Image 1 (cartoon, rainbow, N blue to C red):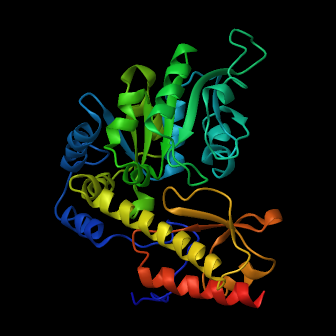
Image 2 (cartoon, rainbow, N blue to C red; image 1 turned 180 degrees about the vertical axis):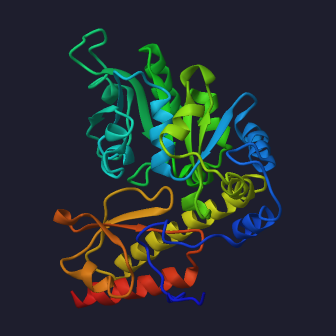
Image 3 (cartoon, rainbow, N blue to C red; image 1 turned 135 degrees about the vertical axis):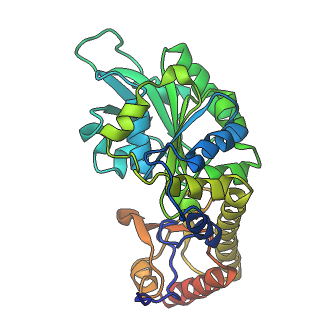
Length: 356
């Protein structure tokens, strides 16, 4: 097959738009020859368990799945009885961007809390963490947080510890949606374990796709007492790969060395370059009317633009509106975003905002 897309086309819509990192492609090819046992009884998935233990500590269990929604659905379902509910931020991916899968597939009631920065606190959790023993109310038994959040913000170690301690004191467990957990680790300058297992996260959805994989995430059980039935739920929820070695090989390519950290550090740095360039342009007067709605802490920049500027920019660079009523947009950087990409986009922003 010949290439039918324009390989020079660049954008800032999503870190899912990027291709596959060459080292991940090489890992898939290396795992391709010969036969391996299907459904996870292969040597690559076995090695993945040891690599996850190196990052998160002995006794963890990793269950590779196809995608982030699958990881969240399967992971949360394993943490709850049928009458259980999950407390999350209103902006959480499980609430906004998963097509109702937690409710429709897993049968989970979501109890959402409004938050300006995408982050929960013990006080916000308490708005929905009540009613235990009342048969008329779905029972709040899990808190789910996202790291980094859908608004590009980060929880500190102390913030996660406070949430975990509070949830556990209420008899609840803590789930982390880590679709961009590598970006969080890079920004915080911390090992993965230090802001997950060590501070009380019970079950983690570990993301690979947004950080250079073709496809592949994993449900990582950090506290075996908080999860049950994952072996069966993964199949029931259609997330059991028959040729699982190719999912596991991608995660190995990321995690055996430092590729996960290199990719995430680069995408974070490109987001900072974009924000710094806009700030410099605003100060110099070459960029006009751009504002920021969130701190840039990982690989996303959230901004507001003058009227009609977004549509003109999108003729050359694709990106999404975040809140169209406020002219708020989201710009995401990827492992393959280059300095030239950022500089070309900055030039376009300067041109279009000056024209506006």
